Image (cartoon, rainbow, N blue to C red; front, side):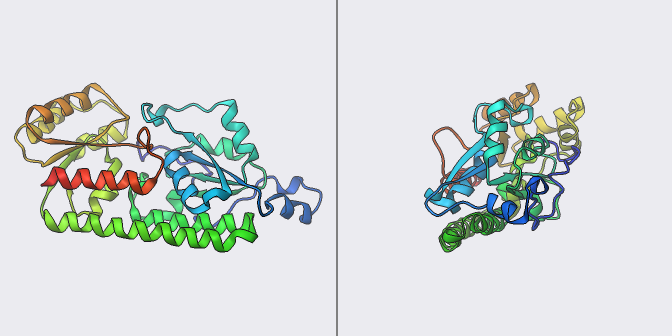
Length: 304
């Protein structure tokens, strides 16, 4: 998805700020505070914009959370998602909402308006990568930061379980750290490797592995601006692939166009590895670590 799309007001929220909409409607401060908390033994209802972020909430919240992920279809294009009445109802009843931000999910701001008094987090702002690329779920250090913030906010919603959430976040981050070491090792084992990408979805993962994205700027600019790729640039991309000047094609499997189909076809015909990446969890996968481990293994295999 283009990182140049106008960012919503919700997405521009401070990373460390939790917005409590609708508190003014309560008759007293005590009522407002009480309305945001959940008693011990009761599940905390949370809503995430995608099942990727939903899996992070689940990893931190464990059996104390009930998570609804708005976008969860691995065969759909998240860029064209339209919200439903069920989405609005889930947001209205939620105590915690986690958006991606960075212009990725402007629609989520309207859902957030339904959640009076809920805790609201924006992954892109928490990540604070200094990069306009909004696909921060591929940034392992950023995911660790977000897990910490999820734990902190769940602890405010259910104070009796605060220590549980903190411990869960620590355990999750330990697994992320091990995965980050594995990514770094891929780069060390295959120095100077180059790939080309249909979209910069896995930018942060490639960056961690010190793998060069050799995608022509004109191609990336056209994709980000949602414009047709110039014919000359398509030809340049074809030469990079068929000439085996790159080790792999990193393909966003959820955004299919005639140009991306041609790129995949050229790669397969030229025995250039194709690494499928996505914006939601693959079918049958519910665990972030399991999913990302498969992505890292696919990258390592392609570069071998």
